[in-house]
Length: 249
Ligand code: SF4
Image (cartoon, rainbow, N blue to C red; front, side, top):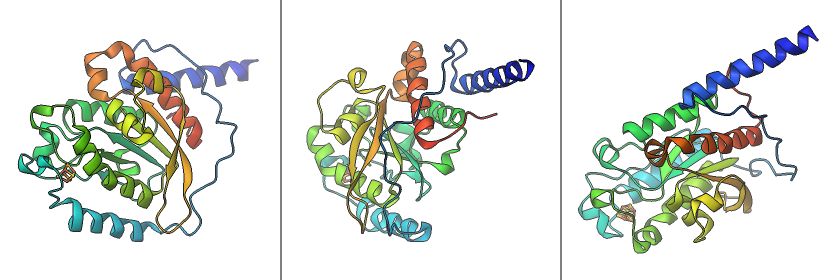
């Protein structure tokens, strides 16, 4: 009995620590969800090793994305923002488009929304270097306006190729534009979030497989609507369960 209480207390301490990292001081305590029953194949057979994938991503960036002029956003950007993180990440976060700071620095998710995403990743027991973070669009829309359908159509093939190279086990779509683009749906993020969707991943040099994709709220939205952080944390707990991650100690 005493042992069980110790385990329970340790578990609660771990969750409270993770909730504090995410900024959820009053987050409801919930059990870690079960891993999905559906069996899922592991990384595609013959998947490239780490160095190969680093080289493939670098080639895509330097030879195609960096000087891309496929849509009018090339006229107003400071620079393209390709994305950063591990080329063999098990988990990829996909946002909408670079903002002011990202456009200036050439990095994804910097500024206040980026800081919150960093805390979300830390609450999962990971670092930004262990995941990959990118956007649907590689150039900033002026004044952070919503991306147009034409811009998404022009740019999303780069994202699909990034995902195929990295070949992750789980994808998290941050916000409606990323979720709608990847899932090819018009459903709202409120309806999409909270459960996994199958995303067909055409891994480079191998047969296509489906990868679980979790839509959730964008950190910028969470900064405006902090009461929704609890739902996002629930979504991330499901992602952790899918990846077999334990809450950080
Ligand atoms: S947003 Fe994408 S498609 Fe448009 S110019 Fe930038 S990299 Fe090219």
